Image (cartoon, rainbow, N blue to C red; front, side, top):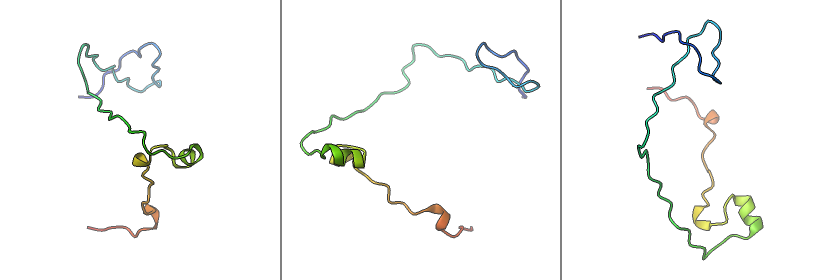
Length: 78
């Protein structure tokens, strides 16, 4: 079913001649997710300068990216 041409909602402009996508239905009083946030043990900490360099003061959270540059790999064929 193609999108119908509807008037844009206030604050949501559409390009002239392009169809507008209607706003999705708002669902009220529905719990979408629960956050699980464990407490941090502040036993071992990086120094402030080291924390700035590493992006965290918690050694347990320090996980530098060590991936390979994907542009340098040959293409994979099936």
